[in-house]
Amino acid sequence: MATQEESIAAVIARFPDDVVGQGVHAGQHWVFVKRERVIEALQLLRDTLGYDMLMDLTAVDYLNQGAPERFCVVYQLYSLASNEYFRVKTWVPEGDPTVDTASDLWKSAPWGERETWDMFGITFKGNKDLRRILMPTDYPGHPLRKDYPLKGNGERFNFPKYSR
Image (cartoon, rainbow, N blue to C red; front, side, top):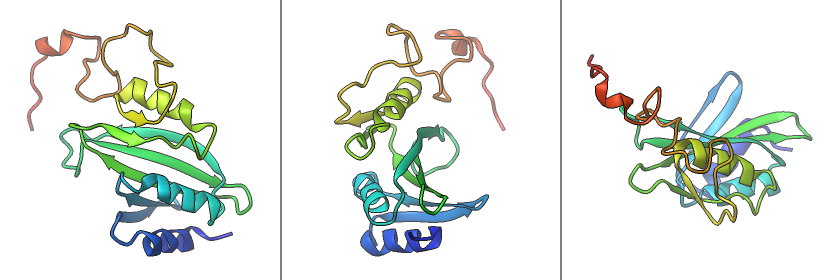
């Protein structure tokens, strides 16, 4: 089984033009991969490098934070054999919030993708069951977006604007 450092090196070697960042936080390594190649990178990590479990799939909204794109989809992987975690991240633009599904790689992926769609409005192409999982089916909007009002639709227009 590969170490986290070896895994980063392997992903960079396989996708040299598609890795746009890397790092480590709290002992957990991560790599940013362009969204067009993220599924291939995840498959490499699963099939070749031993990260056989998708522990979590979520997103972060970087609205007005100076990030390259508004959204970042985060895949938290785990290797049962080496007891190591590894994160794969991909930037997703606000104008086209879509990523290919990872459901062909992990049976748990559709659930995380449904939750991420429900909360952030990011679509996972190829997910056959992309529907609300936490919110009511008729719920308007996606409540974990930073521009979503704190107490529901319509309230944010009455709030004073935040300025630095």
